[in-house]
Image (tube, rainbow, N blue to C red; front, side):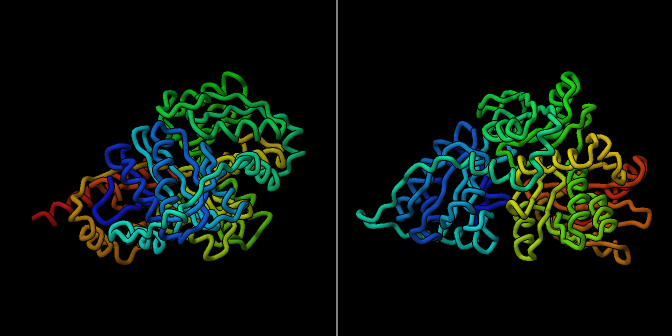
Length: 458
């Protein structure tokens, strides 16, 4: 839901198409972005949603109206468009996508000249132009032009190959099942991995913006078809992408779904083996498993607030080469410091090939944690006060207040309690070395939260 004086949320501008995010609004946003970029040249592309071509045309109209020239890519994975910014060196880009949101949603991401989404300070500058009506329109003879930019996806897949041992992967002839969520992941990944000598099978491979196969977020409950297909065809690996193909969730050869913390830890482990003392960036919502890997293999772990833009911006600021999120986002800096589903898949194949181990074996060698989640209703007007009081109650414990409050206990269990940015609730994420302790933490802190919120209502 778009708020009164805010356009950008955690990851771009989002809203229900033709209700919260209309074509008229998209033209105005395009004009505000064009004013911000001051007659620059911008790449524009979009995902597979039914409303994406309409919104892309509207944004382009707004950009051209302010004198900006547009290089139009059309339908493409988000990371391919971000790589195109690095490759072609325009002033920036605008990507029409709502990523993992349901099909009725759409969104607008604005990219700086390094391929990374705008910083919060830059977003505020665009918002001020938009809300204050300070768009600067070009004279009739200085209106911007639009031309097609071909070859973007091919350039992107060729760039990925430079970061893995292509010969070693090709010799293995891995069998892969790709679940592209009926979206843009199918435009790049199958071709990339066939080029790498893999035998590729796709499910939900036809492009359809209504997402008939499954919802675009690759959650465990959405991936039963992928898991069963991997087992049925005897594949070595399954991978599911989200709606714009910047996130990837993997399935091992036994049909077991590996959540993002585990595959990020695996990539982190082998990255640090080759690059000791390097920094790894991850949100506070990630598992202690990531800290264990960083400690064991001499990495320097940097925690951030939740949000992929924050991870990318932190990586840029401190010159880190690897970042990751628990939801399947992998940021591989030597390629680009943004989430990239196909790059993450290539890295997993590279590790499998170099170690000559199956994914289940590689995951099994990592420290094990059990994760439980919970939520507690909390009115918006009490969220801040609740957090203040919660932090006071936890005085003396080993805590972080980067985003909400996270507590680490001596037995390696932990719990994160943070207010939702989109709903009137608090979310709780607990982990422990056994399932009973993780459930106990969720129950204990749900009760504490309810009591605290009730006392604030009185």
